[in-house]
Image (cartoon, rainbow, N blue to C red; front, side, top):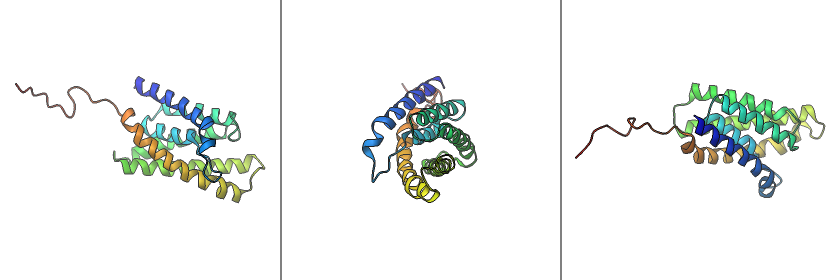
Length: 175
């Protein structure tokens, strides 16, 4: 478990750097990807429990302090999503990539809609229709694709290593 937590922490730093450096440069029609939300959802799916909660809080707070939303909103949303993803995976997950990606997409969309609702409630920058039509829907579509790509790339890295006498080795020696 320790190696997986270290990989998750390094990935969190990388996601934050990508959010600051790369995201403004790959905006499509004014819509920037949110690497922090996508990475947090993937980590919550692959490394459930306390490491996912720590990554969710730290990345959310860093994102809010960098000016991507009202301070405290994103950590709150990401913590709720990390908890809910763990519960959804235990209830619906059957180990297939399709189900895991479906859970991921649903929660990425839900996180963006909740973040848009917080933006409307806490700031006067956007009206409700602008926040959902101009920010939540395009970003959730962008980040859903990004999260699925991240999940497919990282699931092998976060999967537990096979034990020496586990599946795949029969224990028989051929001479």
